[in-house]
Image 1 (cartoon, rainbow, N blue to C red):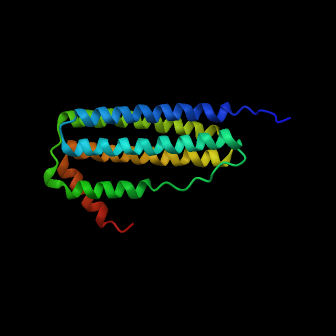
Image 2: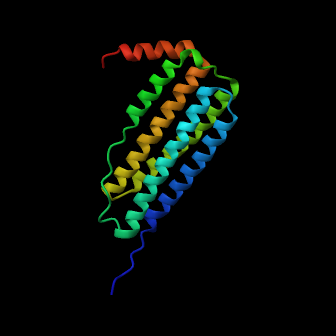
Image 3: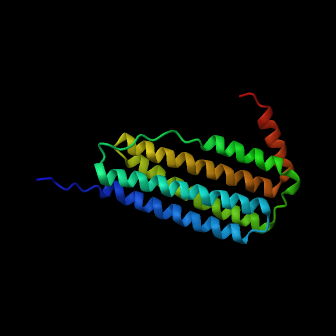
Length: 178
């Protein structure tokens, strides 16, 4: 007789993660509709697509646990979040003359950043609790993704609050060989 194993300790946090990503998607979609700046709107639209990617990955990981338990979990590739952040910042620098941040943009960035930091903390807690290396890898991937979102939002916030300082910082970063 095939014994049914309870994986709720693995699946329940993933259900919460899906809910967090769906909530983030809604927050970002609402922000995209509310902000006045074209760059802010594009930023939030980008984050909506990022949340969709996360939801899909979490669901795939969830399904793999349901189907095979934790013995045959898929390997989790490293996050390419740093490269996506670098590309994003380069596009932002290229739009120098087209970007006009407003106070509504600043508030939207601040709110979104608080949300992303909360999601990152949740994923860190789950990674710390996980015993299975693949589960840990998966949460590490999510943490890297959320860190990228936080850096992206922090960069946008810095730009909105002080564009000249943002461009000086970007110029120094691009000249730094390390």
